[in-house]
Image (cartoon, one colour):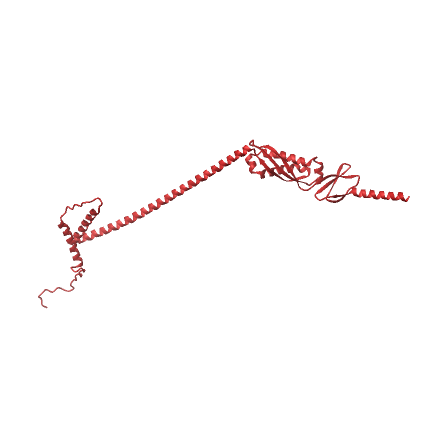
Amino acid sequence: MDLGLNIFVVVIVVLGILLIFAGVKTVPQGYTWTVERFGRYTRTLRPGLNLIIPFFDRVGRKMNIMEQVIDIPQQEVITKDNASVSVDGVAFYQVFDAAKASYEVSNLHQAITVLTMTNIRSVVGAMDLDHILSHRDDINERLLRVVDAAVSPWGVKVNRIEIKDINPPADLVQAMGRQMKAERDKRAEILTAEGQRQSEILRAEGAKQSQILEAEGRREAAFRDAEGRERLAEAEAKATTMVSEAVARGDIAALNYFIAEKYLKAFGQIAESPNQKIIMLPIEATNVLASLGGIGEIARATFGPDGAAPPPARRPTGPATAPGASG
């Protein structure tokens, strides 16, 4: 009797332990488990210690809610300008609803991969090759917007989609290299032409400024020359006036001096001419000496016989007395 009771107690204790292990579930961090009762989803177990009803409830799907990465396989894509390129990429997603991710789609990983590949063909196929190679950010943004909206009913959030490699064919790469070289050569020729044009403009501006300064110099010289001639003419006019006044007073010596000066000046100019080797003087020497004599008379009349100017004559202030008159 005691033996049978002991066996019964042991069986009850074992069943209790089994029930505890079957009803207590520990969910690790970064995961959520779904609970199914008779094959139907009932609730989701969060990370930590959870309890379920043994034999009625069971763990359905164990979903990873951490951010995960999917490697998008390489595929051939025809661009808008009929260029064939090989494109691959990566996608980063995170499950935020374990129930939808478990029961709305059968193979979440494959579904996201196929959906991303399809949208890569759609987005890249609507763009030119040059735009594809230079605007990867635009491609990534458009892919992220489209794919994230498509997987939202599955309880999944796509955080990033990145295009890894875009590989055009080898012959197309060579053609692009030749095109780039031609563009650079064209740009260099344009810069060279611009430099030459600027240099010509600067030289023309320098020549223009030089001509302007030279013209200003000639103008200033002409002005100074005209001013000198004007002063010389004024001096000549003044001398002529003085000679005319002297002649009017009866001073013939001043007239002789003026004529002799002009006479000798003319002969001096003839003598200084580079084309004249022999000077013929069809005049008499006495005429020249007479002119020089007139000059001497003017000098004596002006400065006196001793070289000093004679004192001015004084007019008598009283009545003149005849010689021999007595007072």
